[in-house]
Length: 615
Image (cartoon, rainbow, N blue to C red; front, side):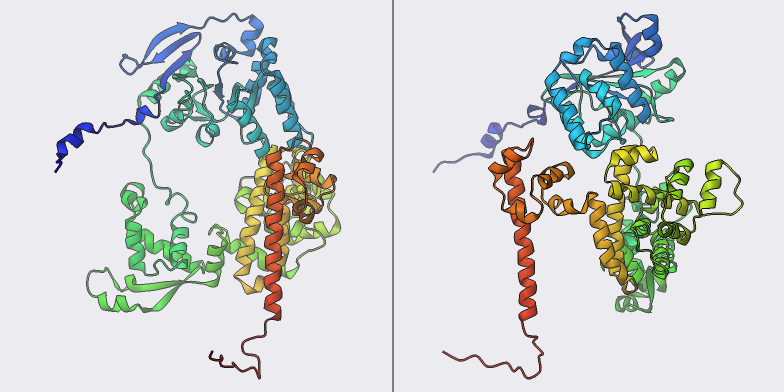
């Protein structure tokens, strides 16, 4: 009989390192002060060693345009390799992109010229023929800016072009560092600031972590541009450890601890004060509580949060002790209070089901209640106001001249909406002319109405670019507002479904949510329910005669390819199969409804259950 010892097995096992599968990318960190480049070196006395001097010929005019020598730094890398330039603000991103393209040689225009032309064409198609003048100038050079002011379609197209090397340089804000996987051979930090705040260590590491691509590059490098006045702070920045990670439950109680408690009780995970306290003890916040809130104990925070929810009418305290509480009352627990249970109220369940921020749930209830007294249905403005996100209103800064201009163009019914919510034309006129106002008006209501005007105009015109120009707002912000309003409209719908008194809103909000979600002409909405069909594609299909789901479900993919521009065979097949599936689902739902209507009720008078015959 063959014997095998354990030791022979051990000898034949070779441990595998992760490095065998994910190659290491060497990252070199540099600092730039004036014309000199220094390498970050932890062993050096002051944390850096001299590396080289920049060798790029600048005329006096170019020095004024590019005092930080950005063009010298980027041209060492592009167009053969990619480069990211992080800028402190969105406006700075656009200015830097334009400045670089003014100085770059015309030779850069020839690099992948045809693909860059296609990219511009795709950007125009995605934006109903519109194109940002900055991108129109920079893309031919392989340069673009990237920040939250772009629409999602623009971001997607630009990111794809950068990933494939059609674009070789992005000027971007710090949000790209955390949100998108777009690595580069060289990363340049325009300044050690994010807006007006000095960089934190974790932000710095996140940005420079974009340098180098595993499997593509063997090395990557970062260059932080700094002024002499910031030198000491930067040297401390590169040498200090990363900031500690803290629980965010305590930062915003209504979005943190109180929402957590409402969910625990709403889902019936636990309803007992003692059990909720023990649950909190096991959270990250529970572990860090003594660091984050020294003046209060975890018990006090738990009790106060539950008291807040009770006072707000979201929870109700049961008056009788639980069976478990009666048994254990005199043993290990603090007091009789620990054994009191809580149950969720109707308002609490509506807030929980609608995922409404608890800071606004009572305001939303009051707004909806007030709306019932005189809901204006001659236009969508009143409903849009009720579904405009509260949190976005608090961050809004209206342009008062634009606000006044839009106000004066309202119809009598629409002006009635403004009067109902408490905003007068006189107030907006005084703000626009800079006059002093004695009467107090709720700033959040005024801001919310202004955002309602933006959304109302957008639903009428269905063109983000024209609305962006009309209200002097970044198109990306308007798109975020639209998606936020669509999401909040859906939340308000679920909120109303739990409260019988708001039954009138239900059918209205179903349609409004659909309008906000698609933001297109009504006839295009059915087509946009199909997977892979966005606004521009829906317009193409509608104009080609495919006016409903039924037309698409019965379409021939080969005919679609010939009829619709820039439609691949794979996309055509996906559109047809998705339309067929949607049509089949709707047919099944109707069939079930028919069967339900034709089926006699089980408790119908005179109908007796007959015994089954035995074979």
